[in-house]
Image 1: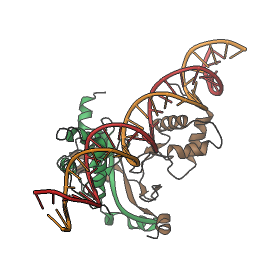
Image 2: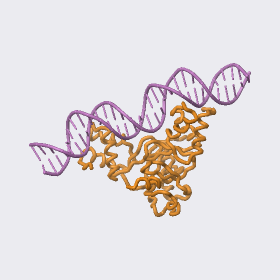
Image 3: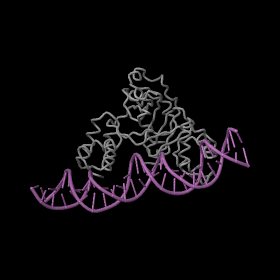
Image 4: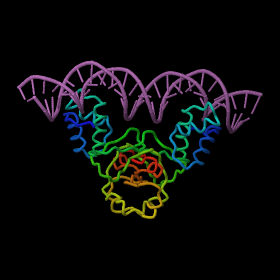
Length: 133
Length: 133
DNA sequence: CTTCAAAATAGTAATTATTACTATATTTAT
DNA sequence: ATAAATATAGTAATAATTACTATTTTGAAG
């Protein structure tokens, strides 16, 4: 089953994801990686983001913002989504631990709950200041 | 600014959304509404789901499941996403109230936090039983 | 160090989800 | 009943993502 081989492209994508604090979409990563690999294809970026997600190295995030975002930190944690600029930020807050959740709710739920996270919505500081409306 | 006029199609879409407990995608609503309006167009469904969302009658939800989902309950509340069948369920749990959140975290955050919700991930009861793997 | 099969890539085409466009039909205030 | 505004069906276009394919890269074994 798919013995993974190295590739300079995948290494660069992983390095990029691990060394940035934002939550880029695939084409934001593409734009960055092109500086080093000018003719990398967007499909390669998508494929490797999927591979890295599958490996648990990064995490894929979806919000009501159009395309998917990727997060260099694969551990469950909480996010803030700006409804103006649509950027995603980490919130400096301890992630919700499963055992902090209401055990009665979880026990009553018909299914296996594996993890959870909080998403905050609002307007980020930059947009608050720029958009004086 | 766009004085809203009635339309049988929008009424039907709203009624459908208000009388179902699941969290359908646009084409699931489309499939339902076609029974009553056999040649309604998918664009009309999308447009009216957007209008109803804009009006605050329903809510749009996004997860790592492909297309967007819509929720007949516009109030913030928590969801469970099944990673097998990709369906979205309500969790019978009080929504997180903003004033229950760590005030220090919120005060340190540079931006205006307006609302939040918890998303749970796992496998729903039906998939647990069907998929004996 | 060569060989070679497996895996990865670039480039392109295809698919899916969603939005935009347009001519016609519906709605509603007058 | 009329007419302007809005909505619709049907279609075309766009955006995001995935699939396909011929070629290149990788890495294990000789």
